[in-house]
Every structure is written in C-alpha cells, then in structure tokens.
Image 1 (cartoon, rainbow, N blue to C red):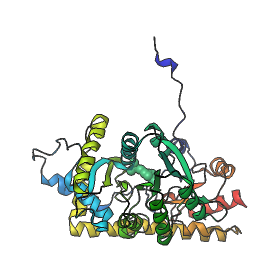
Image 2: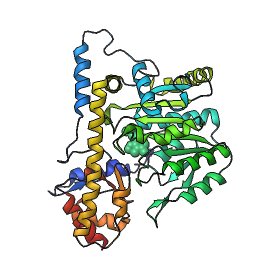
Image 3: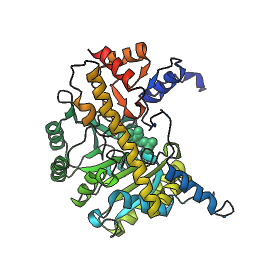
Image 4: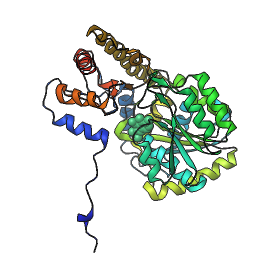
Length: 405
Ligand code: PLP
C-alpha cells in the first residue's frame, strides 16, 4: 500500500525560502533584496493609483451586473487580450492587423511560459532541445523540465566583463541543431540585468533565421526596465518584423504591480489568420484540463487601464516612476560604495537594466551579508534593487564593502 510517509521533504524554493528567513529575522536594519517585487522608498509595496482607479470603476460598474463573477472563456477576457498584444507588438509585422496572432489570457508570466513549453512538447517534440540563457530565472528550468522538454543552455553572461558574452551566444546559436528552440528575455534579463543592444539583437535575429530556430520570448518587465513600454518592446518588435513566428509570454505582475492577480498573456505569431485559428484551437485544448480558464479580476483592471487614454497615460508615468526610482538607487548604491572607499569597479551596478543587479558578490560574501549584516539576497549575488531605499543604501554599501574589500 502506498502511504504518504514515503514522500521525502523537498528543498525550499531558493527565492521564496529566503523570504521566510528574512521574516523570522528580528534585527532592526535587516534588508530583503531577494524577491523581485517593487517597493517604494519606505520599503513598502505600492498599489498604482491607476490600478486603484480602474478597480474603483469596475466595482462602480455594478455588483448587480449579472456577468460580474462569471467564468471567462478558456482564453480569458477578449478586451484584455486585444489590449495586451497591442501593448506588446504595436504595429510590428502587421501581425495584429492581419489576424496572425493566437492569443490567450494566462496565469501571469509563469503560466504563459509553461503553456508555451507544453505547446512545444506536444507539437514540436520533446526531443527538440530548448536553449536557455546561462544563467536564467531559476524557475525557467523546472518549468521546461516538467513539460518534458530537453534543456540546454547557451552562453549569455561574461563574468570577466560583467556584461554580455555576445560571441559565446552567437557561437551557441550557430552550433545548436537546426530547428532548436531558443528562449530569450525580451528586456531586463533576470538575474543579470544585461541585455543585448538592438544592433546585437539584429545579428542574433539573422543567425536564428539562418538556423531555422524557433523563438520563445519571456517579457516580464515591459515598461519597468527603462520606464518606456515601447522602448522595452523594441527587441520583440524587431524579431517579429524580421519574420520570426515567436511565442511571447507577457506578465503584468511587475509593470502594473499586479503580482498576486496573476495577469498574463500568451501569444503566438502564425503565418496566416487561418493558421492562427488552428493554433488557438490547440491552445484551448492544452489549457482546459490544466486550469479551465484564467482569473478575471486583474485582467479587467489591465484592460480598463490600457483602453482608457487618460488612465493609460497615468499608468505610463507611474510605471516610469518605478523604473526611475530603481535607476536612482543604482546610482546611489554605486556612489555610496565609492564613499566607503571601495576600489572595486562597480560600473555594472548602474549599467545593468531592470529590477536586478548582478553584483558579482560570491556565495561566501552573500553568506556574510546575511549572517553578519542581516542582508538577504540569492546565493548568486543578485540584488533586487527594489529593496534598496534612500534610507538603507548607506548601510547596504557599507556591508557590501566590508565583505568584498
Ligand atoms: N520571467 C521572468 C524573467 C521573471 O523574472 C518572472 C518573475 O520574477 C517571471 C517570468 C514570471 O513572473 P509571474 O509569473 O509572476 O508573472
């Protein structure tokens, strides 16, 4: 007879486990630089005023409305899907105009990625390798593995230059078996904060085409990276213009601050409207037995914001203020490290893009930060810049200098 006592305890999630340790710590100046969620300059979560306004309007529309808490269809709310793909693709490749997108509302970025991997496993084949950047967001690996895909990595980050290993990346794209799947972060690569320039993207694009590789883009930070959602979509739009039939997973967790609402959008570029319809029919068949249909509330908020010109404008400036605060904290961290007398080169702290700073601190130094200074970050030295404030940056710089001098 099978009994549950045969199940061994699994390891805690490396990022969420860090949160537990932080919560238990009673030290007054403790700092959480682990989880990638935005905090204001007082270290508090921020619900965007544009989001609050949209929520208010939705409620005012009427609890009496018969549809209010009804199921969405398998692919979610149409107004959200339409607004979401317009937000990402703009007019790129005329894919929207020509009806060449298969679109489904999904469970945030993770859900979109997992759906993409399930799609590849079923229709491209489990034996076709999927290449991911080394390093990548930790969850990407089990997401692809659990879908049964054959995981490979391509070179991405160069420790010596603390930048992109562009030559290594191109070599790996070239050496991969023709027709492999390549996954890229559309902007603000997590954990390194290092993105290719648009010129480098163009070279990558032509290599990918030469090799007939398929492209999966994970876009978890549109608008959050630079403060300009169009700028952050440049690589995606260029790839689509260049003729790649990509799959895209959009997340609205960070840029709209809707983490727990699980708002995301899956889209796939097809060769024709008819092909898009066929793809969508299969995507529905994948979704239905997994979770039936997505949650409605967060998607309605995003649709309300994106579809109302005034609210949309307001959101842009709120999103920019989050991006700007992160950029300011990068500058402050660097200048405080210099003030502490650090002679190490910290240029990468200000050069990197998005929520994370790949600090270059090694696992021993990360441990010392935790044990001696009550500062929590992932073992790979990744700092969530959202946890840095004008009030704790001096203490952080002091501690970083002490462990790295
Ligand atoms: N992709 C990347 C690169 C991320 O950093 C994250 C979140 O940290 C996600 C996807 C997915 O997040 P969510 O499922 O909350 O949208």
